[in-house]
View 1 (cartoon, one colour):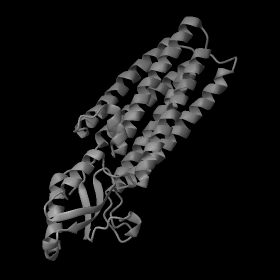
View 2 (cartoon, rainbow, N blue to C red):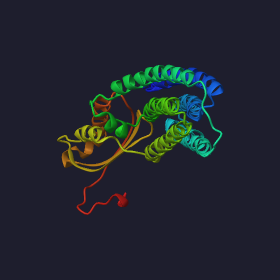
View 3 (spheres, one colour):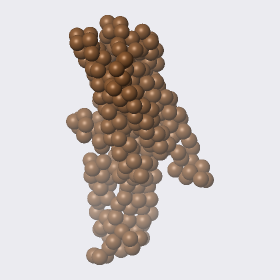
View 4 (cartoon, one colour):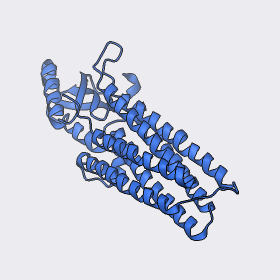
Length: 312
């Protein structure tokens, strides 16, 4: 099965959007001196680097199985996603907070050409909303169970979709904060509001990065199939030939690669044809999950009441 690169359309759309927006934001910063605009510029540059890392991760994830990597390198997506989360935290959030904090207590800080800043921010908002729309479209394609958005994001094993959605959402919220700060500067003449909006943008990026890192840690350590998929998997073993499903373990090697290991006890009359029964179970599993590439390992044993996983 050839693995489809889910989420890559949103990655490419986000890269194009961030390149365009980053240029416009730096122009705005050069003419205004706005801290919020500088933070937004840094944010867009970091996002460009992030999308490039995700594309590299997608390419590495397609690496074929080898002696040192018997299941291929499909989990490379998770590694590069956690690198992206750390980039967002340190290069985006932390750097922005330091810059905003310095300007917050800098008496000579000022913002000029506020209406130019507003125009660039509005342009950025249009572009980022387009990118977010592409991400939402990909989420809709993947969310076949029609789960609520944030539940889907928590349960999804597609790290690139999660990170692009988080980046695009943060970009839109960051632009709104920057616009609000610029409007307050224009109305009150106090540059304090510009620095404050820049500080809030930095804090938001740090919080988003910590959330993403937590999710990707779980993925890179190894998560089982979702509860819905697990129920469907159990049905493959619910057959007359199987007396007991002693143990069943699943783990995502990537969003679409899964390792399945099971131990079963067969009815006595089927023990002589265990290979045939196991082949039928494997065929049913593959039919039930055509969207996945599945590595299946099933062995037979005798069920014991005091069976524990550590006894394997």
